[in-house]
Every structure is written in structure tokens, then in C-alpha cells.
Amino acid sequence: MVETGAPKAGGTAGQVTVGLEVSQWKYLSGEASDPQMHAVLSVRVDGTEGGGPVLAQVLALDCSGSMTWPPEKLHAAQEAAVAAIRELPDGTPFAVVRGNEGGTMAYPGTPSMACASYETRERAERAVYGLVAGGGTCIGAWLDLARRLLTEQGAPIGHVLLLTDGKNEHDEQMPLAGVLEECAGRFVCDAWGIGDGWDARELLGITRRLHGSASSVREEGALPAEYEKLVNRLLTKTVPELAISVTPMPGAEVRYLKQVFPTEAELTPEDGAARATGAERVDRTERFVTRAWGDETRRYQLCLSADPAGHPRREDLQLAVVAVDLPGAQEIGLPAPQPCLVHWTDNPALSRHTDARVEHFEQHQRLGEAVAAATDAHRRGERDLAEHQLGRAAQLARAMGADEHLARLAQLVRIDDASAGRVTLRPDVTAVDFEHLITASSHSSYGPASGTGGVSAPAGTAAGGPGGATVPCPVCAHKAPAAARFCPSCGHHFGSRP
Image (tube, rainbow, N blue to C red):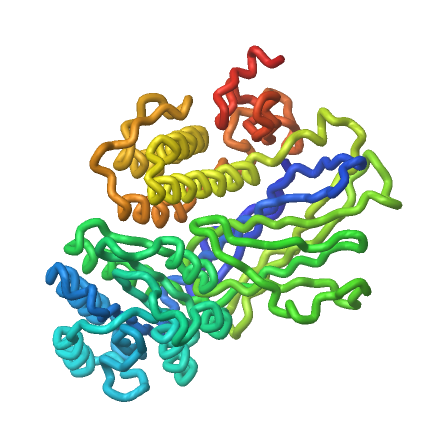
């Protein structure tokens, strides 16, 4: 594992510092049919405290007919919106959108944003408590109105907090896919599910495109406190955007860069339309813009295609250069650009390894796939298959040390042996329990500690050695830490390898 550019910490007042770390296993087989290099980029921002709020907030509140029952649902949504409004500092632009088969203004009464003050917060609260539910659901219309509101004001960070209890049943009136394309890069959206009729994967489709997170509450009364916490976290985010640039060397191409921690988010190159199609560009740099930072660490998975033709074997070569910049006039401390390396080898003992951080997030992706498969099986009435897939999810969560995921799984199954994937589906599980599990599973764990790969490296093992890597299981071919005693996927004991 190669690690470079350790994150800076402890930014002084008035100065933002940014850290960058690249974690990868550099050895690739020169005989592979489609060589790909995967790396995890850890980006940390420090020193944003005291920068002052730079937020503009839109609350999109589901007021469709299904919100009328049970009555506590609409009341909880109103209480949560009011709780969020009360947390907004004076001077914060804000608005409340009433959502059903269209998007209309709840506050202020015209398509504009109010400036938070004692008087405007009081008027907004009265407007929220006066909302009446009725009609259908067209989430695209809500987001389109939010986009127009945020476009007309100049706060550096635009945010939409969306709540729904149902599915996007009137999509034909304003297709969500097209609206998301219009909204991408303009604001961040967090989405919440309430009640028992919402679709977790629909919410994830929104939040991954708009760089937010999807969450839910099992008890309606918990929503106001969750809204308070979320808005308070938002108010600490004072860096509007951060750009990650990847410059591949000749013979290499960027396949993708995606956020994998704390949640998964789609990233598209800023100049995606300018990509080469067969011919080499003069400027090969791909620039990915991320939004709304406070003091935090995020992790990204980078995939590069590589071509060994014409390149020497058995030496380190630079495959790409990764850099971070923070646009704007803030005083910042930026890390030096970091290389992503490749070492072409004919030695399978080296090329069969994988970086442990990369494998951790690929395991998390497999966990999400298992949860989705279990949800689909349960919808079809195939309880045995749902149980099998949840056992697979428990096995992966146990292998990753993701105790929170195990605790959430335990709400749906009795876990008899997590390492072996032996679970029993609880008899009272309902469809919405799976939706809650999907949203919870979209929040990833941090992953192996720096320089360890999640296992203890043997004495004398260098950072690039197998102590921080993973190897394929000889039975199921999934990756496991090089020092592990059993496969986290199939349970095969490595001490008895065939």
C-alpha cells in the first residue's frame, strides 16, 4: 500500500488547511486483459471554524394526501420544519416549499427567499403550521422550484432538505431524471423518509446525484430532533466547494471518481463534454467539484485504466497526479499534488493483492447490493432468499467491523453467526423495515486505519508490502486481508487452503 501526503491538521484561525492521502496497491499484472488501478483518496479539511454561516436553506415538505394519515405524521413534519427554521441564524436566506403533484410556495408567499430574522421565522412557523395536505407526489416539481429559488440569491452554499412519505407517482408531469441534471452542482440535497410508503432507492438516487445523504425515522416524533442536528451540522460548513483534479499520464484514462465515505455520491468531471473520443486532448486533467465542506474527512475511490505496452517492468511509474484546490478568496493551505503509481510485474504473488481500503469500500458496496437483493426478494414473497441475502450482508458487516450495520440488520433478523452468515428472518418484519435498512446501509464506515490495511503488518513489512493489502480467497475469489484467518465472504479458513 502506498500512502502519501498525510492530512494536515489543526488549521489556525482564519486559515483553512486541506490534506490529501492516496492509498493504493501499486502492483499490476502486465498480462491482464483490462488492467485497472484502484486507489482511495482521503481528503480532509480543517480550520473552517468561525467562518460564519454561508447557507441558503430550502425546506421541501411533502403535503400530499397520504400525509393526512396517521395525523401524527403531518404534525411531526411541521414540527421538524419549525425546528429547522428556529436554528437558522439571522441573515440566512430560507424558504419553505409545499410539495404535492406540484411545488408551491408555503413561505414566503411569492417565489422568493426570506431573510431569517425573529419576524420572518415567526411568520414562517405560522405558515408551516397552517399547511393542509392533499394531492399526489411529484418530487421533480419540488426540486425544480427549489433550484429556481436558490439560483436567485447569492449564498455560497445552497441546501435543500426534502421530506416525503411516498413514491414519486406523478413523475410524468416533471421527470425527476431531467430535474436532477438541472440541479446537479447547484445545491446539496438531503432527503428523509417518513411513514411507510416511501422508496429508499428513489431517495438515494436523488441524494447521490446532489451530493447529500438519505435518511429516515421509524418514529415520527424523532424527526424534529434529527432536523435540528442536521441544520446545526450544515451551519458548520463554510467552504462552498473543493475541487479534486486527476491528470492521467499518456496511456492511462480516468474511469471514474466517486465518493465512498461518509456516503456514496456520484462525481462527474466539470468538463465532461470535452472528453476526448479517440484523439488525445492537450489538457488531460479531469476536474471533479465537491460541495459544502466543514471540518471533516471524505474518501473517494479512483479508478484508472492503464496500458503496460511500451512501459518498463519492475519499476515504479507515475500513472496519474492527484491534486486538490479550494476556489475562492479564503486563506488556505493546500497539500502538494500526489502521484498515483503503477508497478508492472510478472510476479502473481504481487499482482494478486489489493489495497485494503479499496477492498473495504468494495465490500461495503457488496453489502448494499445484498440488502437491495433482500428487499426485492421480500417484495416477491421469497422469504428464504431474503433471509439468505441478509445473512450475506451480516457476514460482510462482520468482516468490515461495521457494528452499526450489524445492529441495524439485527432489527430484521436474529443473527445466529454473523461470520458464517447464519441469520433468521424475524416474523414481524414489514416492507418499510427494508427501506429503513437501505437508507442506513448507504452510510459507510471509515475503513482501515492509515498504513495498516486493517490488519497488523508483519515486522519489517514496508508500507507497500502485503501487510496492508488483501488477497483473493481460493474458494470464492472475494478479497480478504492478507493476514486474515478466514474469508469474510464465504467463511473459508485460510489455514486449510486447497
